[in-house]
Structures are given as structure tokens and as C-alpha cells.
Image 1 (cartoon, rainbow, N blue to C red):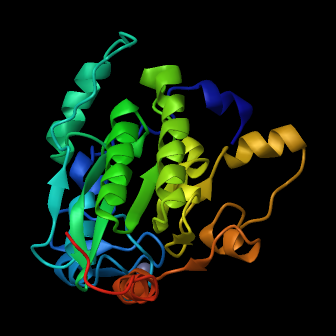
Image 2: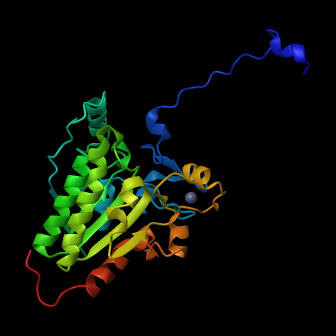
Length: 291
Ligand SMILES: [Zn+2]
């Protein structure tokens, strides 16, 4: 093309693109078929859901909502939610925060980015916390910290194990320092529980980042992750720029962290219940537990 052609009116018209509705952009659209972002194969959504949202072709783990996690992980009908009524305020008067919370409440059907409650896994009583990245990217506001702290205290009171599934974008910027304080608060609650002999199992799912990875997600007696999960404190580019070095391709994946001793194991979702049951059995105290 000659240089002058760049400035003529003969250039092809800009293509018009159809807008894709928000639901079609999701990992798993509510439609009949789903496409795997890893192997690009198409499968029936129904079959994918039946397979705990693990790709039938390549084993890619799709993100799960808290509700799906409850359905797939604990004994049917055993879940009893705790503190579901606690909602966030806007202590710093951050513009637009309350509206964003309301929008996410509508979208996710959740009050906050974590669901906590009691339940059982193959008959073993536990207290459970499950983060849900569809609410404010699973960010850690005061309510997230408070609900997790109360759940740990409940596990302590009942003398049952505490299990947490994490998924988070990190701190919640609209709550500033109050968000960061949740790292200390949850860590202290876990330490007290641990001192009283409590068992803590953390399962990091994609993505577990920022302050969550730097506090309660990494404080389990067992620290596990799902395959392929991104687990990080700071973003890759930030680190590369500050240390002026290129990082390996698999940096900040569950597999990389396992290799470097930061995880105890990677648990494929389809084996999750069985593996966690084994651990609960190992730690089962003698005699009947009071519930
Ligand atoms: Zn796949």
C-alpha cells in the first residue's frame, strides 16, 4: 500500500461487530453447550456440571460458585448456613460502592463474597467457608473477614475441623485499610483455633491472590490447591518490573508452588471428597463427637 493511500477515503469501512451479551462471555454460559477455554472443545453444559465442572476432554477446572461447591463437596442436605445476614456498609463513603454491592447481590444471589456454614463430608462434621469470585471478584472486605472469623470460632466451639475454599482477587479497595485488617483478624482466629487443637484445611482454587493468599489461604495445617489454579500475592508484571527478571512460564500456578514446597498437594476436584475424607478420618478423635 502506498503511503498516500493511508489518508484517502478509500479505506475499507470499519467492521461492525455484534455485541455479545454478558452471559455468553462467562466460562459456562447458561446455554446448552459450553466451550472449554483450555482445549476449546465443546460439550453439553449438563454433562460438564455433572462432572463437577471439570472438562470432559482435558480436565480443565472451570470456576465454581459457592452453591455449586456446596452441592459437590458436602453431604446432601447437611449444609446449614451461618451469618448469611451480614452485609457490607460503606465506611469510607467510597463513591458507587453500595451500588456495586447491590448489583453483585442481584447477579450472584449472594450477600457477600464468602458463604460459611456447617455440614458434613461423608458423615464427618465440619465448618466450611467457601469464597465466590462472582461477588466483587471474591475480594476481602470487612464482612468476608468477619464471616470467616466467626466460622473459625464456630469450628473451635464445636471442636470440628475448619475447611476453606478460597477464590479471591485480594483486598477490597473500596474498604481501604479496613480490608487489610481482615488478614490479621482471620489469622489470629486461626491461630487460636490451632492452639486449641483445631484442624485447618485450606483448598485454594483459581484464582487465589493478594491478601487472601498472604493470610488465611496459606495458614492451613494442610494447604491444597486445585489443578491449574493461579495463586499469587502480587501480579506477575509487578514482580518482573521490580526484580528486573523474566519469570518462568508456570510461575504462580498451583503446580509451580507444589514443586517449590508451598503446597502440600494438588487435589483434582473429582477426587476432592475422597481425599478430604481420608484426612478427616486420620484426624478423627476417638469416641463420638458432640454436635
Ligand atoms: Zn478442555
